[in-house]
Figure 1 (cartoon, helix red, strand yellow):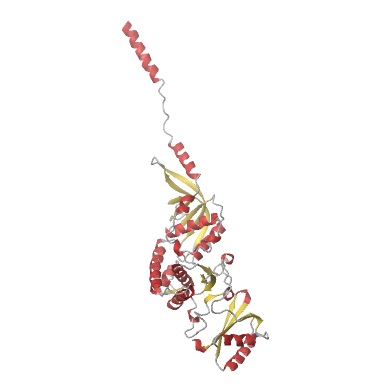
Figure 2 (cartoon, one colour; figure 1 turned 90 degrees about the vertical axis):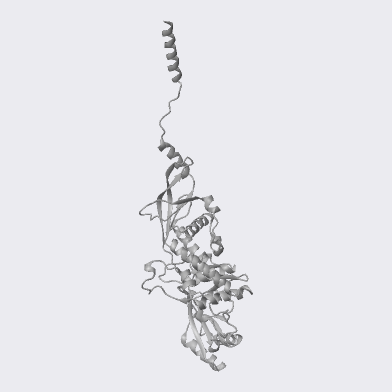
Length: 420
């Protein structure tokens, strides 16, 4: 009997002891994943991908703002900061994201919706980067659109969760590995070109040699009529400039900008490509503390025998010689004067009583090589009449060129044959 009671007591104690062991619920992975997702979605991130958004809205790489700000662009030394320095902190963040995409050949950049920039602002920033960086052509094919995309995050314990991100997606076709490889070949060739030139002397002397190289060694070529223009895709203008020595105006401006960077000059590219079918690009460079324009496509304006024209009409010229107002002009430096060819006068018209005296005195001041006048209203008959008087006075043949520039003004360049 005692044995039976003891046995029963032991059984009760055994059962009683197990009643205090907590029973664990089955592991709810979905709840665990939601916590990770919520934590990830609370961090503002910028994403990058090469996936076509219409086929797969998956982001390959994401960076936090701090990670992007800490990133060092290995090619930043070749990029101007002229426009970059005019941006707000949020705009600079998008600018750097696009640089990261360019350098790493990501065609798609996804800007977190909590970064307060509009699609129109993003469009402008893409253009700013193309004007600051000689490694990005101006023939941009890009689009911006709102999108919800996803990326996979690997948790510390090895679990992978899918995180949703909302924002503005930017697609830039120029950010391709094939084009980037060609830019790198062009960069190496540009270094060789720079090292082969005499890099001594003043800033102006060096800038003149760089300008002459581009203007006289690269042939202007229009891709528009080319049957197989990269099969309708993008032209690697910088590559064509330094490797093929034949390119469009974008290639001239990119090549000159890259050489200016190698020389350590402050510079920025200008364009008038917005809202026009065919635009133009040129350069702006700071020499001895003064900003000037340079247009490398104007090699025919470099005289061979002139003692007073320097590198010609389109080297180091003032804004008054621009044929149109540049895009984003409010962010561009003012080029208030020309280095070699400052106008001898600004007049209402060729019929002005002082017109002849200005071109006569200008011709004399420039060793009978040239005179330059800017007029608000051009009259061919009045202009030719005064040119005939000038030719008679100096007993020489006179040539001229009429250039229509911005603000409906006309530049009249009078030349003697001796400078060519």
